[in-house]
Structure formats: C-alpha cells, structure tokens
Image 1 (cartoon, one colour):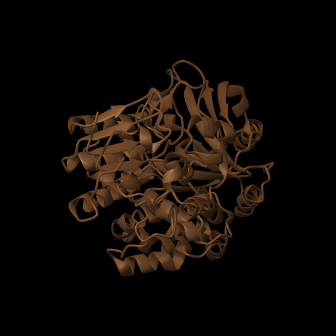
Image 2: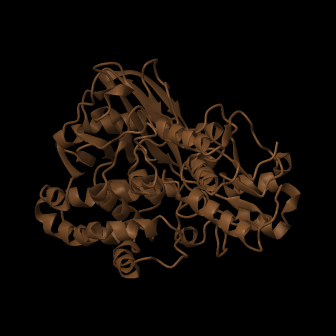
Image 3: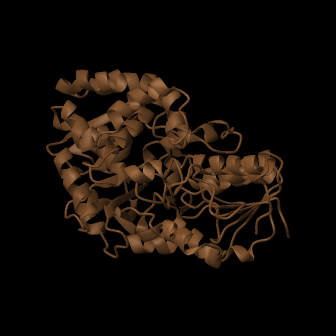
Length: 479
C-alpha cells in the first residue's frame, strides 16, 4: 500500500502531524508498534480492575494552552478537560503548604510576606500569556510574533531557578517555584530552569492544570478519530525497524528520538550525520508508581486535598538537593516527587469512594532501582496515614519505562535533556530542526522544539515543514 505521507509513531506529536497533513489533503498512514495508539497519552488498569491510571502523561496545562489543540473542537471529539480549583500545591512540614489557584491575586494572598513580590513577577507574565505561550511553544530559532513580550519573559526566565528564588523570602513562595521548575529534570542552578517554572506557573493562572475525564487516552482517541474523519488510517501492532520497510511516500515523519532515527536510517546516514545524532543528550529517568487507594489521600494541609497536582519534596533547598543528586548519578533518599490525584475532579477513574494516585520521582538514566518505598515515605511525611489506604500499586523503574516505550531512552519521558544548548539546537544544529539529513524524512517527536509535553506542536511544525517542501522545489519522494 502507498500513501502521500507515512507517520511512524502515534504519540500526541505523531498524531498531530497526521492531522495537519490530512487537513492539507494528503492521504496519511500512521504506523504504531504498540497494540494501542497514544504514546504518552495512554490509560490502563495498572493496579487493580476498575482503577484507570494514566500510563505516562496525566495533567495537561500545555494541551489547554497549545495552539494546535485549541484549534480542535475537543468537546465534539469526546474530550472533557476537568480543571481543579487548585492547579498545584506544595506541602511543607508542620501542616503548611503553598498553592497556586485562580488569579495571581488569589495565589499571592496565600503567600504572606511574599505576596507583593509574587504579584510583581507573575502579573505581567500572565497578562502577556496569550502573546508569549504560542512563541514559547514554537521553535526558539524563529522570530517571535511578540518580541517585546518575549523579551520580558526571557529577562526573568533565562536565569536559573536558584537565582529567581532570591526574589522571595518565605519557604512557601520559594517552594512553589521549586516544584514548578523541577519539571525541567535539571539542577535548579541550571540556566532556563527559571523559564520552566515561570511557564508552568503562568499557564496555571491562564488556563489551569486540567486532567482529561476518563483518562489521557481519550485525548489520543480524539486525534485518531480526527485522522480517520479526514481519510487517514492508524495501524497498530506494526513495529518499524528500518526506513526500507516503509511504503513509498512523498513524506515520512518519525515520532522517534535521534537514537531511533539513526537505527531506522542505517547505512543511509554518513558517519558524520550519525555522529551528530549520537551526540544528542538524554535527560534523567523516572521511576513511576500508580496506586489504587481505598480513599482520598489524607494530606495534612487542606490545600493539597483540592489540588490536582501535588509537588512533594519540602523546601527549595531540599528539592534542589534531590535534583542535584540525580544529575550526579545518585538516587536521592528524599526524592522530589510529582503526584497527580485526578479523583479531585474526575470520579470516573476509580470505583465509588475510592481513588487512583499517580506519581514519579527523577532518577539517574537507565536506573533499575524501585523507588516506591522512598516515594511513599515522602507522601506519608505530608499525609500521615497514606500507607493504610494503599490497596495495590504498580511500579515501573526507569529501565521499565524504556521497555514500555523506546522513545523514553533511559526512562527520559521528555525526549531529551532540556539543556541550554538543546533548547536552541534540538535535536542537532540545523536551522530547521524538523528536517533530517535524508530528503523527504522529518523528525516530529519531542526531541524537536518545543520539547516534551502533550501539546502537539512538534508534530504540527514538522508537518508544516513537510508541506512547504512538497509545495516547492525541495519536494520529492522518500522511502
């Protein structure tokens, strides 16, 4: 069988690429090795029957803010975004907690002596969010649509989170920043960790941190349905091991990392081209735990009981120490943990009165260490009695995560380290990051700008590059 375009991989970016190509009138085929589409957007009964867990991505602020997803009628496609009152909370010892909810003023009101500093920092960023988020979710090598707004954001975001934290005096405000910045999976002294924190904080104010009712898989199902409605096809259970296996097509788009690209291309790449791909750096891995619980988590701080996401790790210094340990190849004794409790707004995830809980911590790449006991100790620290609620758990080490999805190299769920160099030159130093060294073959994964997260923008940008090439003298058959 032939097609105008072949997409290998059905993660959010692969499906976004397929939708974009199909909307342009191309006949599109998506090939997926796993038995179900979705990549990082899958949902399954991992711990006990009747308890539905998001296998990877669970909370979707970037989907809510993404220009690609906002162009879709998600409701018509069966997707309901449920937004918790509190986007995320960060518990501290003594029953205290910081939290981000609603407006900047509402959040600042809970930060005591740091309320004014929080307003001064976040108000301009949230005001400009509709201008800057489309640029943040685009290749940073392109000219921003709103350069002044982006300059204001960059002024605060380029420095490391450790420097940005000096604006605050209280444990609460500093912890709030630490939890958001630690999503970067870098030392908090690294450049751009401030940008990670500020992006997630302003997104929480602008659109919230929603979960998908029924599970993240419904987001992938919606994209599959959109591809089908446009005449495309998604085929599962078909692993591709070489570009030579693919049907002849005008364009081939790969939702894979540089490592898989090199393997698929084989001898088609020169030694220099292969070396460029091999120099790509992957980030920290994750050890993930899913729990089936007999009731809601008994957080000591009331704000945590209303939050869809809870960042666990204590003070800024404790979170920074945990991330520094991981960067140095150590497994932290008190890890920083990201925890999602979808039952706060979505009761469909578990039997009546019971709950699912999703969480992970960062670990060195390729780790085989089961961190569940350390993660649970951190939760118990801020929610005494948690252990008594655990009915069952499912654990995946970083090595298990890679076996589940080869794109998670070493357990890295973000498709590559978010270093300063790889933020601007991801995956290789090339003006257009979506073209590969092979004519008609494009990379559309989170290893391209803007990087990890469920936003579909890598796929959309790669598809637009392919369409532009097909429309001009660069267009030619691939495969």
